[in-house]
Image 1 (cartoon, rainbow, N blue to C red):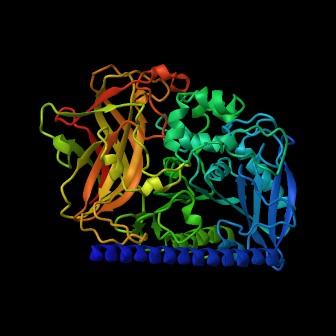
Image 2 (cartoon, rainbow, N blue to C red):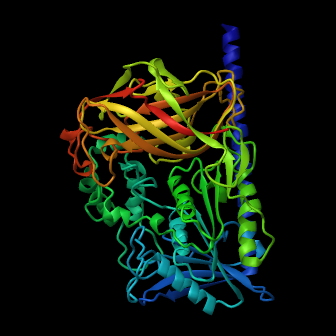
Length: 636
């Protein structure tokens, strides 16, 4: 008994020591960051003059623009432009940002850096339209879009800001990434380079608000509670976000919420214009089709550097489709893609050496900022040497290596199918059974959680969280390969192709492609005490609303108990499954509250009532004639 007590005592003491060490290191990191911020802030004040101007557009509306101008007037500087719906704060010519530019490397290199509140947001005049449609054939001064607003802004900056060298570059992350994409369409002749970073590109197909027609409830409710509030007049203050959750548990909050229509009845009261637009457009109709820039990425003249992160919880779709949209039109100017091991915007800050339990064995953030981003802009805006960047600069997770490709996906890759087999097996070999399926009951009253954590905001952790919590549920199908005898590297698109049936008339299907670590994997997590044996890392996960299986514009009910094929885009990946690891595929029909619950009945889900929700039994077929699989591109 004494030995047991002593062991427990020493273990508890060790835990306290580790906790104290972590707190100390965190304190050191925060102190170091605070010091860096103070140094950067002082540098900006000593070397830049800030001015604020109302820049007129062709229709007479004026847009609030904050401009940081180098005090050294012995040379001319290019202009960098960031247009944002998220505020150019702080307001006041005596109040400075603590950092300016895509990174402080730009500020120290010498640039004129302009930030603009987009039309209808914060201190700018006019009416705000979320992901405002592009107008191809503008007639008259009142035909405006984000492309024309950018053109007019650049024209004004060139004529009114002294010591500019006549060249302009644009950049932005997330929604500002969308505005950056729009700068490249009908671009001003002075715009020489554009860098859309995690650009919002299609709010229905894959960015932020929906994925393959499935509504991303949790993030959309929290985001639009502020973003969609009316703004009667220009103001430096943003609307507050919803905070009256009454619980730290998002799973319980959204389950208690009931059908999506209750959001308006209980909270928004029909006053949130963007939310109402979504509720009124459940399918990929003309409203949504007009709001993606991809069909208009033709004759792009500036050099483009599109950037994204493999663990981006918001906009993985955007950079991939923006790059491809430009590339498919064979641009004459350089069109480059960078994808790294980052969450949303992670390339712009921090070391990028780890996420959660996963190490990347490299400081990917500084590498990108110093080796890729600054040299790219400097070449086109300052005549600096060409950095000779590859067409696609891709960080391959698993192997933790930067790869250079002259096209994306790489030409030395081939499509292969990972087939689901009976008894939970997974293999590149096709199944041989005549008839085989697995089934599970999906209950909207007990949906599969998207995370094992108790949290009220979505966060990014679920993108690299251990998936064992889901694998152990009876309503999640699990298929696993044998331990790999050699490395398997994938680079390119991942596509799910399921043969399914249901007792209902609609269903969601969530597919996760997972890297399973060996049971004896070394405990090299950045988080002390973590055991990595058996860890299940989600390489790619995606959802499909089955009623859109044939058309996102014209949904169709599923016929009960009839086998149907459901194919959907899971986006791209670049990952090496190491020798000794296993490849796993999980299939489920809810991902809550990340995604709203499907009633499993063919209805307009935004108008569904509690009575519409029903249990359903889903089957996934794994036979020779109905071979459910995940298509990947394997490097040769």
